[in-house]
Length: 335
Image (spheres, rainbow, N blue to C red):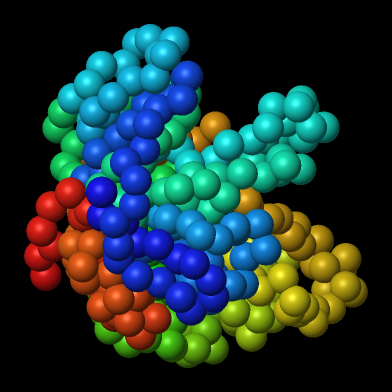
């Protein structure tokens, strides 16, 4: 089969690799779509210590089951599924207390084992979630990132009528805007340096947009501030925009080597809650249900490439072009 293979930092090519054979308890999925993510960039650049080479990356995947391993029940070939890539060990302290997303022995499809930038991928059957027939292929490919946004929402107090400020109008920031609006936000403001993304955000889910939070002219601040950039300067600025008694959510992935400066006195004196949100936690099926109930995220997919266009897709991603970029391993890409 054809697949994207990363053999080391900066060493990536589309090549032939052996077809996967399902182990007991596994299925093989013919991948219809797999989204590009910042995590994939860290893998390509050698910045993710848990990733081992050679590796087929890609963890935001969906497709159809084509083979069942021994002992798999309840699933059939031909069934459309989205795949939760996270593989908690089930035995460490955090898994045993129900916090599998914080597993000490982290493993994931497309990160520590072969992923979805391939025509076929073998995954544990327990990771497959059956998709409703009415869900579009674009929406199906957004289930994994949406499940991250749902978990982020679940980490917030979610008091109806509050005002939100989101840093970052990329896919994840836009998804957060959509889910907090659905959860009762009174308003959603967004900040980004990319004016093209801001224009889309304003038509999609934002009430106000700006390239600098100061331009929003909300001196009292916001009840909830969310960082979806992972950029230290945005985080530092965002912490100053939280209203008294408000909440700051660190949702974006930050370089582990970076630190941010903030005022501990302000956190104390203003009673600010600082919360983190890590990956997916009991939020995969709720994400599917949200999409099936009518949450329309299809406009977030701005570019689709076939496997042979992977290098072009990476260039577009790094340039901040468009929004979500999908790779379609089992079909021809289209703009």
